[in-house]
Structures are given as C-alpha cells and as structure tokens.
Length: 143
Image (cartoon, rainbow, N blue to C red; front, side, top):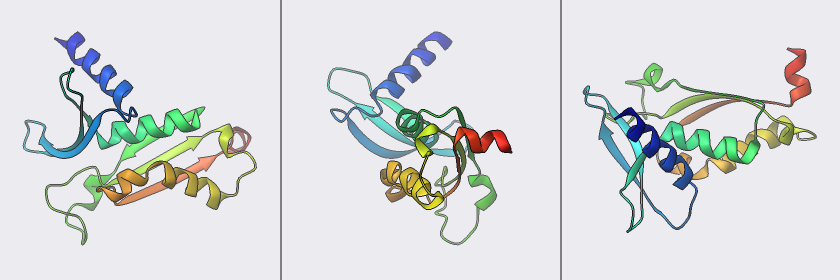
C-alpha cells in the first residue's frame, strides 16, 4: 500500500508543472478533522492526484532555482484566528530558506521578487504570507 501512495505522490510531482493538466484548488480533510488545501491534477486518461500547497511550492522553487539548500516550513498554525485568515483554510503561511547560485549578482529585492514571481499562482489562490531567506552559496558559507 505504501508503494502505491509513494508512486502516486511521485506522479503528482511530475505532473504538477505540466500545462496539459487541469489544476483545481480544493479543500480536503486529512481524516483527523484538519483540512488541507490541495491541487487536483488530472487528465482524462489518468486517475486524479492531489498535491498540497507545500508540495507545489517545493516543486516550483526547486525546479526553477536548483538550490544547494532548501528548507520549507508551514507555519500556518501560528496564525490561526488572525484577521484575514479564512476559517478552514490551511497552508497560508510559510518560511522558506533557499541557497542557490541563481541568486549570484542579484540584490535581495530581486531575489525576493524572483521567488514571488515563481509563486504568483499560489499567492493568488490562498498563500497569504511567505518569509524568505535567499542566499548565494558563498553567503551561506559565511553564516
């Protein structure tokens, strides 16, 4: 059973960026009363697969930036009950640390803009806040 789940997860990650597939934001329950946002990816020949917002963020950033270090933390639980947080919607706040040579020669503002541009669709569909640490490999060595 675990092999089937792992296979479906891998397939979902492979399909996540394919524009031939239909993407729909949905809200699903994890069986423990907590709801998770997910993206339904399907085509007419395949069984549909759901990706969480965290999986989509991870895939988009890793594919585009090829990071040496990548850390993604969902901190949405820290913001429950805050103004602007829709009840029942999860995966709204993330911390991300990216160390990538793609950032070489770019200012901090341009690095952040690049990350935000990559996640534009998520920002328009429920991602509320993103804390970004974006460094080059040489900058990461110094800290």
